[in-house]
Structures are given as structure tokens and as C-alpha cells.
Length: 426
Ligand SMILES: [Zn+2]
Image (tube, rainbow, N blue to C red; front, side, top):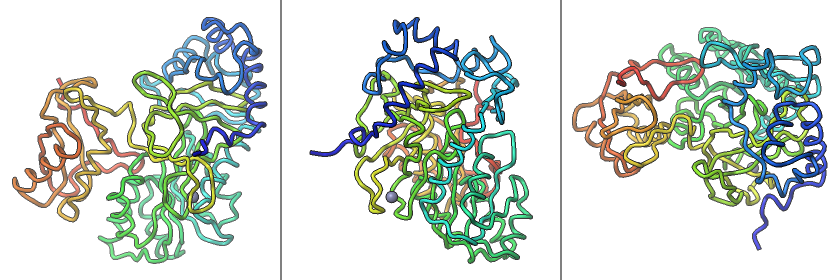
């Protein structure tokens, strides 16, 4: 019998979950009201982890509404403002930031989770790590304390200082570079253009956006740097650096054991799916011991594939790879299109293409009529556009309109590259 990852759930998670539910009823007006409205009078009625799928999901929009109705932290927060040790924020859609408070213990928990994720591919004392996360306001900054805790020689450079990164590559010979995948590509291109050697680098740790899990994109980075690429993935409302890849590069291992409960659901129906090898769906998270802003069944919008079998590294921890964001997803005549998957197909045409693409929908919203415009950076002509169009049609079952533009003409982001641009939409 195949052992399901759920079967390995430690008893401490069950106990922590029940205590957390009791705390939600006591301290979070948002969850008390939400769970009672769903027919669960108290924590006992809400049951244990085996019953979790009966409870309602939490959507990001609900957190925004909760914060707008009960500023500054929202009624989902389970602590007073002065009990928070740190408050991160995400850029809100209407210009109002969404706050993510953490207590001292929450911060320590995040640090431990991030240490697990970043150490899976190996971290040696004295190894030099150049990192590009800014100190604030985004949760990625929480990983900075993990780099210190790892005992490495941490060289924080921050985002937007490419010259400083190149200088560090030249003078400090770092073994590890930590950045987003699109920024890694930018650094590789800049280093090559300026003749700066990158051979000291052994590992590129990428996080913050999917790219690092795409085979062709990863190979391009690995070739450019002559180093191995390892992916880390977090989610701001849950924990920074929640998943991390080991030396076998077989998907990112879950590092939230004991802190966070993870589920896989069908994004369309919300029905639970088995955490078994090769299953795909959306990740849903529940905090088991978060104090400041605990979330229950939070929909991540991350569309992933998972593996539950034991990894070659010996770890049984669930593994995942992100296919795309359900937020970014477009639907072309009933076919789900993930922009990251389009980028992956286009990347197969390297070196004739740079790997950078942008999708320019003609209509606002998710539903699109074919052909869907895909702008591709390439050195080529109509014949190449035709080949790329055919490859996209064959692999992803929708009709694109491939437009070639000169290499380096699409915007390069120093944090996350935008794969969908609605500026041509009506
Ligand atoms: Zn492993």
C-alpha cells in the first residue's frame, strides 16, 4: 500500500490544530462569526484535522474586507496592535496596503521554517551568500534572519543594486546567490555583458515567482552561471520560504511541518484532492500555531503538482512544483492557460529566444478569444514565429499570435517579472 503523506501527520499537529481552533473562536471575531455562520457553534463542533475539509475556505479578498471594515489589522487578527513584534505589508490593489502582523513567536517560527527551506540544498558555515531581499516592507525580508541563523557569511545587497551584486561577485567570490528567477537572469546577462566572472557561484537559490521550477528556464540559468539552481517558495499570508528544494532538485520540500497544515484542492470545485505523486491542484494552508494573524484553509491561488513518495535525500516531506498562479490564469475557449507554461514552451527555442515573454490579452478579464498575443524576445523572423506558434498550440492547446521583438526589449523586473500585460486590452 502506498503510504499517503497524511498518514505521517504527527499527533502534535492534531493537538495544535484543535488548540488553534479554540483560540480562533476566542480571539478572532472574523473566524468566530464565519465558523458559526457555517454551522459550527464552537471548536468542538469544528472537529479535528480529519474534518477540516468541512470548514469554509478563507479568500484573500475576505482579509482585505476584514481590514477595511476593522482597521488597522482587521477582525481576523487575534492580537492587539501592540502585541505585534513586526508588521509586514503587501501592496494592496487600491493603494491601501494589506498588513501582515507577527508576534515574536510567529517571527521565530518563520525563521525556523525558512532555515529548513534554505538549508535543504546544503549550507556550510563560512559559505558566502549574496542575498537580494530588501529589509521591508515585504515578507521576503523575514528570510534575512534565517540567513544569519544558518551561520553562513551573509552579504545582503538588496533589490535594485545590480552594480553592487556584480562588485560582490568580483571581490567576495560568493558561493550562493539568492534572488528571484527573473532577477537571476538579469544578473547573468549583466555579468556576461561586462565580462565579470561568476565561477565562484555553486548554487543559485531562487524564490518569489515560479520560473525557477521551469526546466528550460532553470537549465538556462544553470548554464549561464555554471551553478545549480534550487527553488524556494513562500506565501506572504502564511509563511515566507515555506518550501525548499534539496540537492536532488526533485521539487520543493514542505518545511512547515508542525507549524502549518497543507491541503490540495481542485481550484474549480474546492473539493479536496489526495496528496499523492503527480496530483495537481491548488494549495490551501492552515496555521497550526500562528498567534497574530492565524488563517484557516487559506486559498493560495498557487496551482501546483505534488509528490508524496520518499525523496532520494531520504526526506518524506511532501514535495511540490508550482505550475502557475490561478490568478494569472487565462481561459482561451475553455482551455486554461498559465503564462508560466507559455514561457516554458518558448524557452525551448533558446538560444534563438532569450526566454523573456509577455502575454498581451485583447480583452480585460480571464476569458479570451483566440488568437492570444504572445510577445517573444528573439533573434529571428516569421519562420521562427511560426515554429513557436506551432509548439505552443501543440503543447498547450490554444492558438497564439506570436510577435517577435528584439532581445532585451521587454521590461526586466528586479523583483517579479510581469508575464501578462493588459495594456492592449479593450
Ligand atoms: Zn529531497
